[in-house]
Image (cartoon, rainbow, N blue to C red; front, side, top):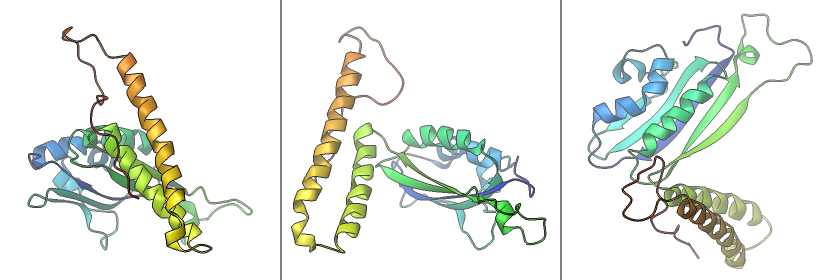
Length: 212
């Protein structure tokens, strides 16, 4: 699937804390969309990045951490592989995590080729993905990143001690979103004792914690 004439160089970067019972075979299956896209037959053979200086896809069985700093050449269809990867990692993650994906327009970095047409703009794109064992875990990561961004921006004008109210308002927004999600899941839940089961994450679990 990956080739040197592909329109994008796609970089996947992130760290995911996995459950202590997750083994290599489970991780290999969860990451199958990535290494198959790269044209490999296994995670071991597909873990290397297109760039030697990048560590690629690494799994530390002692700390149960998945590290990704991995580049593959591809096209827009790689987004489907990312969706499938996230679904697989949701089942293995211990906590919520963010994964950054950057699409670099290869034509703009092609020194030997014809290069882009005059006046053309690079088709670079950036995507932030989130994985986690529950919706609450995923929302917690989203909330923390947003708070970091808001605080970083506002500290240019205000002291950090003045921004407690801003953080509280961010928490209110996420609490409303979490409550709406729980309510929607409750509406679709079968009656107790029916024995029914459905895919996806359950509505149970704790509300995202708040940092004041």
